[in-house]
Image 1: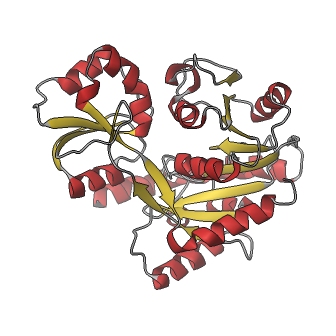
Image 2 (image 1 turned 90 degrees about the vertical axis):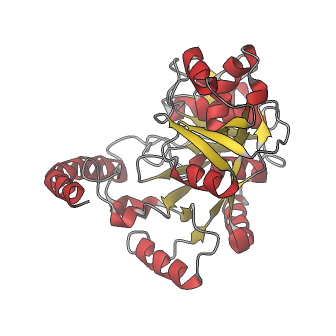
Length: 346
């Protein structure tokens, strides 16, 4: 720990340089010297200040479930990790390789309920969606807090309870994509991955720490991760006892902690975030696996592994754990806030 602190201290000057560069970029957007374009759809952006997973996908899915039944909705992502470029509208031929793992997860869940597309340039993506689906009224931007070329009507900033942005530094001494002051662009902050038993006193302290960097009066909501029942790769509920954990996500620690409290974890295999699995990976995962043990993955990993697992007839040995965001007693307050903000458009 002491060595790590010394390394971070040595890297601070580089963080100041990186932070200054992002400050200049934000200043140019704030003064409209860099173009930021408004699109016809009502735009809700979900993102973070921190590199790595803060729970963006479950929040996007929550908003889709909330709005899509009444409002023509589209999800637009950059499609990180895909093998393609440019605008792609998800369809039955799409895969994690063509549109990225998280967009493919969205499409797998919401096909027929919401449009899913990827494009590095969000303005271009929004316009292409509208040309193909002129009925589209709501656009959910996944991981777009720093993508300022497109204006948004609502900016939702996520803050990981375990890695709060207000205690961090810009890259490389820390994990911030820009300085903490970037929180001033947020219309609301969601503190994700909170313990289910988070005390009101601690919530108030976290709220005070966040509001030091946001505009006055910005609402702060608290949410936990809700793990659903385990499901087979065919989608059926399955009972588990012994499991081999496999994850290729930004922060696998909460997933590992959950599995350890529910099952007997016999082995763990952690890959880099957005890892592109290969047939040899599948063979390695199944090798020496006992008959009473399942390979258990996240949903994000499942959408990439499933085609190979099914083709090799290994589906009976694999399972995944779906997750969602749970606002607990604050759910009504969040739903009221976000629907009120969007209410004058729909």
